[in-house]
Image (cartoon, rainbow, N blue to C red; front, side, top):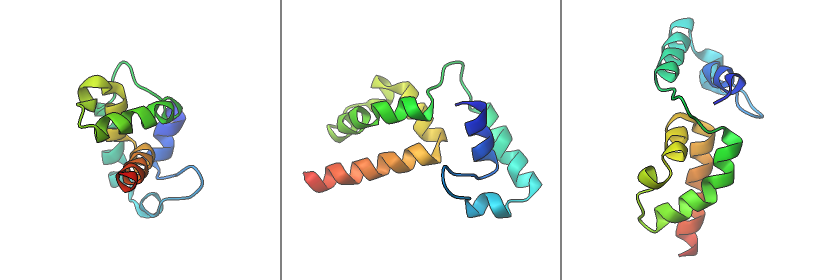
Length: 100
């Protein structure tokens, strides 16, 4: 995760909109959120762009009941931390479920 993405998530900014959580969160909530995010950082992480490039493959493997956390741990780690990418993943899941 790049530092700009980290700051945007910390203060609740989204790619094109302001999150209501970020607008109303008090400083102690922001600090708690920042500390939680820092404690979950890893030496190697994927950016949102890298995850988006792998997300279709990740979603298809998950739909086939593969252990995606084992097969693609960096993608899983990113989805666990990133609301935007997790939302995109859920959309792809629902599309695949509708196509079956």
